[in-house]
Structure formats: C-alpha cells, structure tokens
Image (cartoon, rainbow, N blue to C red; front, side, top):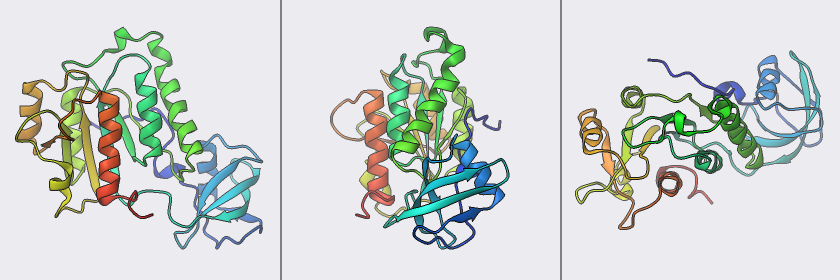
Length: 257
C-alpha cells in the first residue's frame, strides 16, 4: 500500500537553482523551484534556503514569485548543507492529544525526511482527539513552521495515519530498520552503527506503555531490529527525539560541527 501524504513536503519542496548563486545578485529560478516556493507558502520578501547547482546552500530573499517564475536575492552562504546525508523515516504511534505537534516540530528540526503516524495496540485513536478533521492541517502547519524556523531546505513529508501492518510493510524501503522497545537483549544505537553506514533508516516509536509483545515479534519477523536507548524509561515523545538525535550523531550530520 502506497503512503498518502497530507502536506507538500519531500523532494518537490527543495528549492534548487540551476545557476550559480552570487552574493546580492538577483537570480531567476527554474519553474520547478518556483513550484517548490509554493510548497513553502512563500511570498515576496520572505527568506528561504536555496540549494545551488554545486550543492551549496544559500539564504535568499524572495524578490518575486509567480506560478511559473521566481527571482531571489542571495545574501548569506551557509557553511555546510542543511539536509542530512541519511534519510530517516519515523513511524510514530499516535500519542494523546497535542503531544504529537511537539514531536513533529522537534523531528523536523533534527532533520528527519518523513514522519508516518500509525495505530498500534496501545496507541491513542482519532476518536480520542477533538476536531479530528482539522488534524492533518494542524500537523502540516506544525511541520512547515518548524522547517522555516530551522532553515531547512526541504519540508519533511507527513503521511496520513496508517495501520500497524501497513507501517511494517513500508519499512522495507529502508536499509536499516529499528524499533524502540524495552528488553535486556536489545541492541544499542552504538552497536547498530559501529559497522553499519545506512542511507535510509526506518525508526518505529511506540506509544506510552510501548509495543505489545505480539507487535515486537511481528517486527522481528520482518527483520526490524529492537533497540534500547538506555536504562531509563522515556516518554514516547522524548524517546523519538533522543533516538533521532543519536542516529544523526552516529551516521548523520550532528557530528560535523
């Protein structure tokens, strides 16, 4: 089953210039970059991060914007790429009420590529949320605002809520697949990445109370590795933030200075 996304994130949101960018010199963007600016809901005068043809990143002011054309003025060259060299997809059990917006904000700041909310045996359900029909818009806006705040070049993709079995199947797209759960025999992040340099990482985060034993067994049968972060029990949102931080430090861009 192909995931359905509720926002305009992913590669289509990457604002890429085909011409070399120069300090304070107006540059015209190709149509694809103009479309990307619309994903960011940009307006003339706003500041965005633009990727140059050589992989450099620039902070630019939007000078003009139409459906098929846009111009920008670069004013700051960033010292390093702002997008992580690894693609991290977080499959997060639906938490209670507003806590998921905090998770979305922090995971966006930490550089994840995709967030997929899922239903598990112990997760919350949409029936427990107020105004459920407004949730996709609220979640999308939380991701967009966080991406702007932390100067991302690409908006993370946000999937609609999916079932547990769908999440299990979707993790097959990643070359390293992990799930956080308690257990004496579980691996640590350090052990996982000592000899493993993945390109795509799938990370499954359970609800308060964790995954059920049946879910852990199903995941292991699919080749998903159970991991533990340490000796303390973390809340679901803390676990998600801590795990992504650890992954980015081990094989991503948090250790690049």
